[in-house]
Image 1 (cartoon, rainbow, N blue to C red):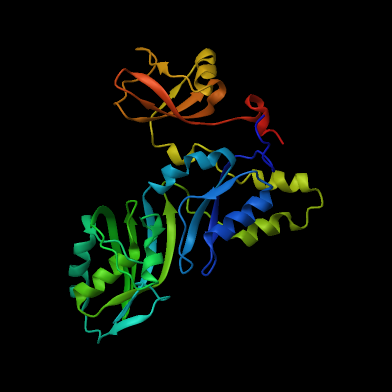
Image 2: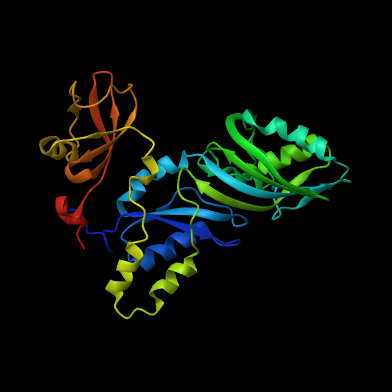
Length: 321
């Protein structure tokens, strides 16, 4: 018999505004307790220095967090010129200083080098893994691990302000982009060094920019005596599970195929059922009444292969609370 998970089987995504100094994991645990949820997770941690959007996935929505990890993101960053640190941000140790003698024209010309498809060497203070350990684990021991440059895409890199040694940018970029590295490389190109003073994540994927801190959600239910009513208030704030994948193609299944799909069975795509899909394409799959069933891949035999399945309580007694 499957082990019963403690907590409510509540599914959805909450957009939390992370404050500076807060731990991403600590935020997830607070939201999990607040909702009384059986399962919760985030979609890529923000550094303690960083603020802004942290999508928290509850329940079955955690199965689709990878799509948010792979999504485009937008940041606003304040860089301080003239000071370089070992972590490329304000939490690190100063490794060099220099006089700032940079004109607006020089800055604009330098920023051109950080737009479009570029190659970036990840920082030693990143969470990328080497032999099972994050790079920052080695960096804190003074060990430098060789890293290959990776291609990233900076869709836009807009100068918001430039005054004295302070530069503010709004950067829309692909997954795997390290804003700290862009700032450090920019400082090197300008010949004076630079580091991140403030960093805020504005958007993730196509989520709305509306987000609230943990305290906001706590205050919503603080005065409610009925815990059930408190949960109803919070539940209404959740985004649907399929929100991270709405840009991907979709298909609808009839009642019979819905049952087969929910049991993990491959399905042959009928000629008149959907438009043609490319092999390897991820598909959003829905059943009757627009019930989101999960994600599937299309193979070269035009077969739908279930990959991420949503388990609903009525279908699996082990999920009931």
